[in-house]
Length: 455
Image 1 (cartoon, one colour):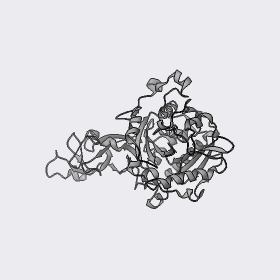
Image 2 (cartoon, helix red, strand yellow; image 1 turned 90 degrees about the horizontal axis):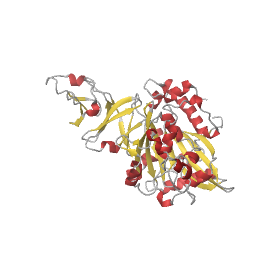
Image 3 (cartoon, one colour; image 1 turned 30 degrees about the vertical axis):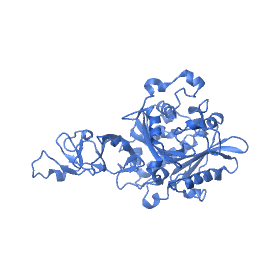
Image 4 (tube, one colour; image 1 turned 90 degrees about the vertical axis):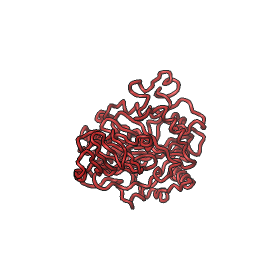
């Protein structure tokens, strides 16, 4: 059982909190690139309980600064992007993306005040349509060679959405293979040509069986959890017959992302990013291994649910997530529509702003959640003790973290261990952008640790 103290150490994200100190050692998504592409490329950002302003200057450089002007504390989110930086409207003080004060125009001409002023700034990097920032101490880690970062812009699509609860319970849905047979159950299957860009609607690899039928008819998966250099690999097995088994391989990317198959052609890599203790955003990169992503279609699909500019869901607690009792009886398990993001949002928001984990009763199907919490607590203590946490990478080690491998398909009951790797490797080698093959799929098992059931 998780104690109250353990729960608080994992979920609190302030700069002085153990969990917050850990998360600050990693690059965090702060905005989609299109959020800075309109006529005013300035956005307020709240991340890990801190307030920042994100902007793009005339040269296309991105900056993240503390939001309060160092003059008298006015809000720089209302600043003017001009003259090589962001200018405070209060007295015209100008700051560049590094936080250097370029001008204090109200001061006397010979004033040297500007030379003594420095606004706190933070590194920003663009990766696959998402702007990432590092707000921790010291030099930031290197980015790993994940597929979603290696693929070209034509083969990736990024989006995000707000969830009104703590980041940890939102993340844990993504490492819970059993819930999909219930929360995401559809009573009827769709035509194969209607599933583009939609999760759990495509056919499984090497099969004409849609994932909706697999989840509906085979609700007791055997779950295996392996420790890997990047976090954990999860395998959910659903026995279809004596000779065939549905195999679904997903991954936990430490500390707060997961990697799952969307279809035989596409995967999702998704971060759960704390706004504060009681709110978070999910940021997802969809990666295609075949043809370029239809970004307009993917965007239009998601804007049916999410409202701009804050990417909040039209279905939420205020309107009971669109619950329809007739639909629940005849069409879906939840009665909350066909978008699984709504299902997940209801599940995690209904737990409360911060789930009270002292009241839960975990089962064997929760083994991945149990293992992840143990890993999270372990890495929190490492940082508290002055050590670097796992996946805090340098340039050399970053190149060794590739992939990771994932798949959703129906293969042989005997030999599924090599079957899923063969399917994933074949997909990678056929990718037009030369997706790298992770080392553990050329030498199976070389860098994974099988966790006993107790963990």
